[in-house]
Length: 288
Image (spheres, rainbow, N blue to C red):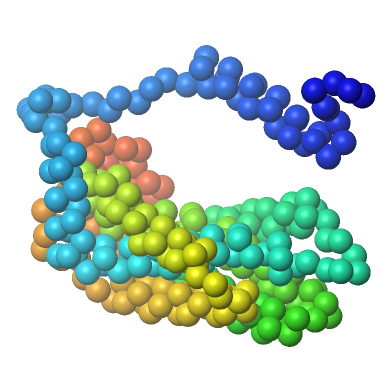
């Protein structure tokens, strides 16, 4: 009592987080090595493109490859709705009768997200990423439709419905991230991948800032999230039926044996996927 340092109580989890971060920092400093990449020996580091070259190449690719542009809208729409959900789930679960246990609720959200990620892993060998994302967007749309109806009721009887829909959306987030990661790596060329991913953040930040600055009700915000997910569903459906553009084919892209996804081949060959072997710079299929 009277000390400027307070430990325990509600600050206990944060104190424990500091200890975990200190341990992680030590482990990273000792065991992690920096990945500087490798040069192919022809151009070397002197021939590497500048920042403006990467930006111009990525921008040109966005307007010449329809799939890259549609994927940008998919990322912005879903992740924008996710951030809008982050800002609104606390007031949506506010109760005058019983204060909600926010720590337990957040833990359950993370558990639902982990279950979704595990489901994506289990389905990875049998369901294509685009199909997983289409199902994910449909379920997430239903979750926001239910939550918008519950938020418009302004009745504590709908708290359970809102909470159940939020858990369902968190499950969809768990399925989304590993699935879209595979899809992005198969569509966006590796040489401009980092630049294109950063360009994807521009409309995403615009959606989030617009939702924060606008004075709209919670129910309206959830309805807008549902509309964003409808757009994402249509875009992912269009991606699955659109062929690769000629401009994107200039990069080191090799179709896989099934003709579904694309494998990016860098100057430093990655480990061959399961069911394949690498022969020189080509990929050959092995019987599974």
